[in-house]
Length: 186
Image (cartoon, rainbow, N blue to C red; front, side):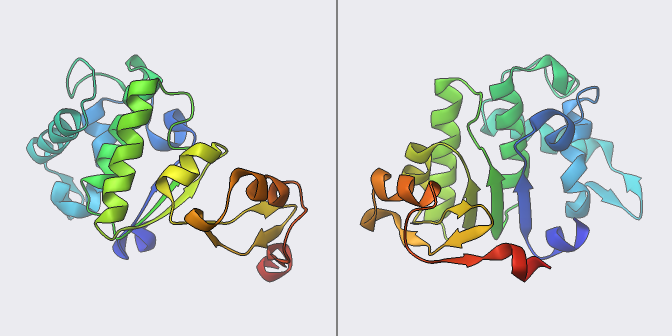
C-alpha cells in the first residue's frame, strides 16, 4: 500500500467498515489511515491538529452527516461512511483511483453525490478504475467498459459505443474474444 500511495494511487474498497474504515476508531483517526504520508505525521509522530483538520475538511466538503471528528465510524450510516472514505481518498489528490462498488448499499442522495464526484474527478484527468455490478453506474462514470468472466478479460469498449445488451452478453461469456488473465497472473 505505501508503494502504491507513493505513486499517487488510492483505493476505495467495497467493504467500508473493516477495509475502508476501522469501526471503533474516530473519524479523525480513520482519516489518518491512508493520509499518514501526506503531512499528517512525521517520523512516526502524529500531528493530531492536522489530522483533525484533515478529517473536518473531509466531513464538510463531502457532506458527511456525523457527530464530528470524534464520532466512531460505526456510528455512521453506510452512505456517510462511504462519503467519508471517498472524501479521505480524494482530498489526497490521487492520480489514479481504484474504487470497488462505489455506491453499493448507500441511499439515493449519497449515490448521486459519489457518482458526480467520480465524474468530476474523471473530467479533471484522474484515471479511475471502477469495479461495479451496477451497469447504469458504469455507463454514467466510465469512458470505457471491460468485463471479466471466468478469468477472461474482454476488450475495453468505449461506453458510448456499446450498450447494456452487449455488456450483458460479455458478462455471460458470449461475446468477442477475451484475454485469459488467470494464465498471465500465474
